[in-house]
Length: 244
Image (cartoon, rainbow, N blue to C red; front, side, top):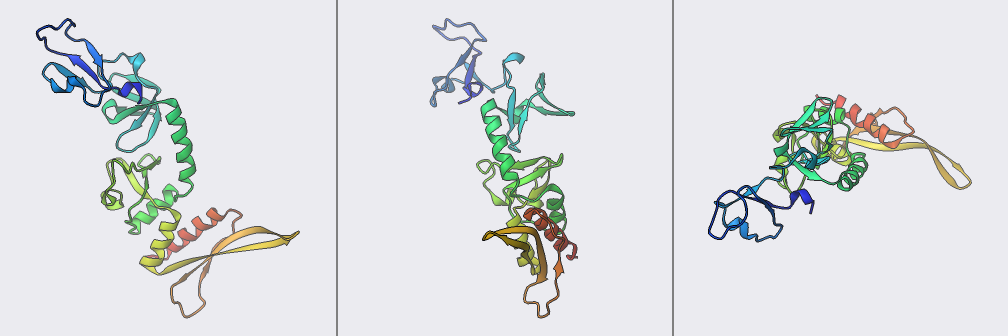
């Protein structure tokens, strides 16, 4: 457990046999702490209460958005993250630098599986309302939903966004599935390649966009890209352009 999250209790009333001074603070991490049984004598403190500024954490996690932040400085009950961004301490939980670094690395790798902010927002405007694992804040920051705090899928859709969120962030597979199921649009991958010493070398990726069960061979062919996901983003964008 993070040391700053160990439960603390403040003595707020005297009692027979007490030798401690009123206002004394006691740490007790026991799951069945005796101090919880006497709330009129011991006040259970929030993790940030009764702390000096030098005790406040350098790294925090936002409880609602599950976003990680490095605190530039503390001003009273507010954490300043830079670029004018501040948050009330009651919305935050302390984390260690190790937790911060590990989670940032995981998030960075995970983010590559999701649509970018611009395309996610266009999808929202076109009616996409599927439950997602991630979202974009109004600031543009990518965040993963905390599935322990928000297990209900109905709370992770565009029609029910929490305050501060701009849109959900669909996986690439979610976007292509939605286009197929909702609008009968199929995105098929193709590539240009050559062989060298029995090894296949991909030159370009591109997609053909058509309608399910289309009798004719009409389709839209996308621009060619050396990166598969750049080509896929272009294909999804082109597909959304044909939706009313």
